[in-house]
Length: 311
Image (tube, rainbow, N blue to C red; front, side):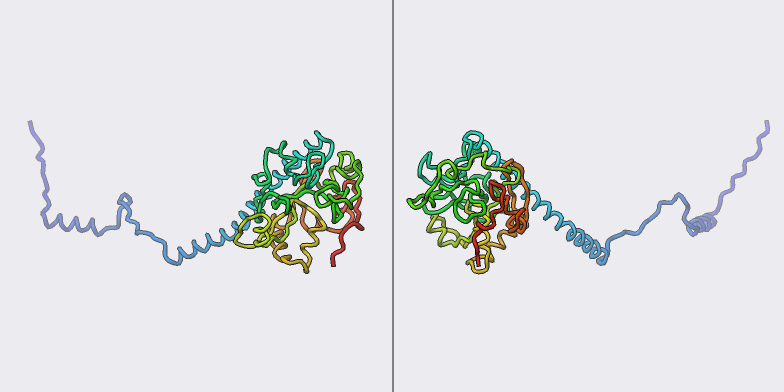
């Protein structure tokens, strides 16, 4: 049996070296792993990114601030709405609106209107229901010497500067309890529900107009030691008093206006006798035109001649 000879060819080491060298010097094959250079942000790139973030933040912050302000105003409107519901329940039970300060059928003590609503709100004047989140003043109960200080106010007087039968509070408040006042028990002692001609257009309660309360006077009347003067409401929303304290001649008028504008950007949260709530700008709410003035009075008449004439 014959076998073909097998010839083995062995390359010399010198030949292998030349061949291997040829392979190493050839271009990188497609299957060879790639080697990418290490990457990093340059200083300029970082500064550009930071600048873009800063621009975006500057664009978003005003929107965020507006959203927070709107949330605070909505919360305040919720408070005012609850207070107006309590007012409606009081009217439903008694057929008249609470007087601002004292109801003589109960006592001659200093019982202010929030106390008349306490059975329906289960809240006292210093509780959170009566605290607007945008209010920067003091919340303190009234006493025999002074009215309560706080966020919200009652439309007690209408467009008349003194207690009257135009608003909701009636004429018989503590300031009118003297022998010189002649009253009619049926017509002006308390305002009955039927006396309000247009409930949807009659201001009931809302953000109080603010007054300047020097810290020394606050200490004297309420025994509260404050670090500085404050700008607080007196449990009233009143067109005459507001116009008086914001005139140029009134002490502290600049601070009053500044604090008022800061609250809801100058808007008042106001509930009407039918229970609906509106956000009304200060310029519109206190405007001395017929459409605005009639909203203060229970007969839905402007009674412009009853406004106090400030210089």
